[in-house]
Amino acid sequence: MKGDALDPKALIAEAYRIEGISLEECRTIFLDWALSLPEGADPRAALDRLLARHGTPGHPMTQVMTEGRAVALPRRRGGRAARRS
Image (cartoon, rainbow, N blue to C red; front, side):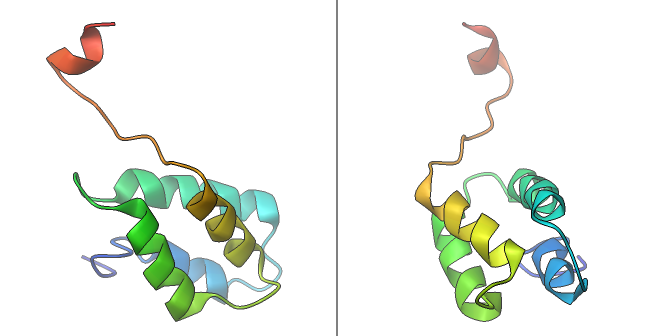
């Protein structure tokens, strides 16, 4: 594992290291991060902890994570439950 339980691929940490990163790039990284969370993880709690760790005011990733914190992130469903609809 490259990162830790909150950021398994260290995507969020790397985003804060990229100078001049755009809001659109941060959104792409955020989506990849959200899809990388382990099954059953609480994304809002993870975002709270990541914002406490990295949340630099004015950084586009801080904005994206704050926006992501405000909305419910969908849970992945697989197998038979996903095919019922």
